[in-house]
Every structure is written in C-alpha cells, then in structure tokens.
Length: 494
Image 1: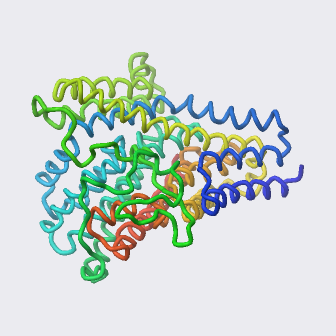
Image 2 (image 1 turned 60 degrees about the vertical axis):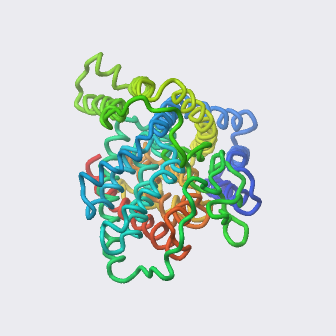
C-alpha cells in the first residue's frame, strides 16, 4: 500500500473521530474505537490484524498504567475526604503571603494536588481563592482565577500522577519516573512564567470588573458537575451555572479529564462537610506525606537507573506500581486514624467509580495509537524529518492543539497526537518522553467553552464569560506556548 494512502487514511480516521464527537455527539470512547477500526481496515491490516491492534492496544496501555491510575485516584479521594485541600490553601497563604499567593497556588495545584479530582479540587478551592483575592491587591480575582486555571490544566498533562501524564507515558512507553522528573522540570517554570505574563497583562488594564465579573454561584451546588466523567459524558450536557458545555452550534464536548484531571466528576457531597467526623487534626505533612514519599521513590528509582546504579530494595520500592501502592496504603492509614473507617469507605467508593471511567478512555486512546503504529505511519513520517528533533516536536504540539480546539478534551487530544507521532521516535532517535511532553503542551491550547473546567471557573469564581475567556482560555494558551518553548531545549540534552 502506498505511503500516500496510509497518510490520507490516518488523517481521515482522526478527522472522523473529531466529527463523530463534535457533530454527531457520539461518546468519545465509541468514536475512538470506530476511528481505530477504520484505520486498521483501510491500512491493510485485515480483520484479524485490526482487531488485534484495537484490543492489544487497549490491553497494553492498561497493563502499563491501569493500576497507577486507580491508585492515584483512590489516594486523591482519601485526601479530599480528609479536608486536606482547604488546610493546604490556608497554609500557603500564611507561608507565601498575599502577593506570592497566585504563584504558590499555580505551582501547588500543578504538582502536589494532581491526584485530586479536578472538579472536586475546583469546587473546594474556588471559594477559598475568592476569599483570598481581595487580600492580594490589585486585580486579585483574575490573578487567582488565572493561577487556578493554569495550575490545573498544566498539572494534568505534565505531572505524575495526573491522568494525562500517566496516560501519555503509557501510550509512548515512557518510564513513569522519567515522566515525573522531566514533567516537573517543565511544569514549574511553565506555570510560573505563564502566571507572571498574565499578571502583567491584568495589571495593565486588561481586566474590566464591570464587564468581567459577576456574582458567583454557591460552591456547595456545582451545577453541571454531575457524577460522570466529563470526557465520556454526552456532549452538550449542562455545566456550571446552567450553561451548555458545547459550542453555540451544538458541537463540542464536556472536555476536561479529572483526577488531576482524573476524568472525575464531583462526587455527592462536595462543597459540604467532609464525610465522617474528624477525631483529630493531623499535620498537613502527615496527610500528604505518603503521596509525596511515593513520588520521591519513583523519582529515586529513575535517577539511579539513569546513573546505572542497581540496588534491589530501591529498585523494588521505586517501581511506580509499588510506590503508589505504598502511598495509597499510607494515606488510607493516616485518614483512617484521623477521620475513621466511614470516611475511608466513602473515599474508596468515590475513587472506584471515577477511576473506572478514566481507565476506559485511556484504554481506547491506546487502541487508536497502536493501530496508527501498526499501519506503518512511523516509517513514512520518519522520512520527512531530519535528525533535528524540533520539527516533529512542533508538529505534535500543533496536532494536539488543533485536536483540542476541535474536540475540547485535553486527554483525548494529547493521546491522539502522541499516537500519530510516536512511531517517529525510534526512526529519528527522538526520546518518547519529549513527544509526550509536546503532546501535553499542545493539548492545553485554547481551553474554551467546550470545557467543563471553563464553566466551573466562570461560575464559582464569579467571572463573566468574557472574563473567563481572559483568565482561562488566554492564560492556559499562554502556558501552552511557554511549555513548548521550555520543552524544545530539552531535546538537545535528552
């Protein structure tokens, strides 16, 4: 089969996925499978080869990341039910002061809180951010809204255990420790620079309170945060403040993927009292300690592996599945001591419900990526690139950005873009982790009205649609561009 036919059919398959989701409002999971089946059949894989690619891709990625996603989501549910987020925000305000609060918020949300359901995190943190806003000086509200938006979205795709980062690592076969370290290298400067740029714009008169602000809705009733995965929900369903999550012409989908974007929706009771009755007030370091220790073990294992040092105990504990399992066990024990068995059981119930939805979406993303690889696209694209890594990285960023504008989903656009360019890596010697980071960066571009996060930020923080387009859409788009500019120099050393 000619190269042109394979390239054209790959483009048609990706376009078909977009059209099915946006125009016909078909569930993203079903749309991705249809796209993978079409590509397999038209690329000459045959019936058996197509089925093997679809099912094999689904199984392979879940074998790599399934337990990681489940453990991360369950740990985040424990921390949520323990009331850890409210206490952390208060501690940040005390430690960083009002002027440094937007930067501290963006960094903390994008790193330490990426196991929390995104809608849960927003519903809890938005009222706190609004109360803090008057204390940080001029343009406090838009600065806090921007920090939340940038931190949430960047953390999803760059920071383990964010669901986007874990899924990208699985699709591309990137060691999770490597994704954790390089993701941290990218996310911290990205959120700080993007937040600083937005702060300058806001201080120079870009924000008009009369037109960009309105009364916030009550955080206890986050309309539109139904108990379903935004990525897998029916497109056009209602969102916060009763606004549709689709575009004005009816297209678009509920976009953002929670659990740090876990694909998670807000469980019952969010915004109300923490489940269970707290028996004792434990230090924040103790509540977050097991999760941070697990991430440190993963990072330590990656560093020792890169240095060629072998130690059986560290190698075992540094395995991502073991490290996150220990983090989950430790968090469960701490929350159980502080809040009782009822809180733990409630958190486990919410976590299992949400992680199931995320796993299905991640798996079918792997199906499409594997089918693209089996079709031979990698060798074809590899002939179009030189040994320079800039061109393919910019291409994967552009593909992910276009897909995100069309579909509105960070996870789907990132995984699809990564799947298209993944076969190029071995052909030109490009590190797969760079493709993962570039795909994540592109998927952040132009978060807009198809995003559930957009409407939650709009309603809970008291912004008008015009104001939210500034703080969320423009702010996160700036972060997307900053991220790829941070990633490109890494291609010279990775």
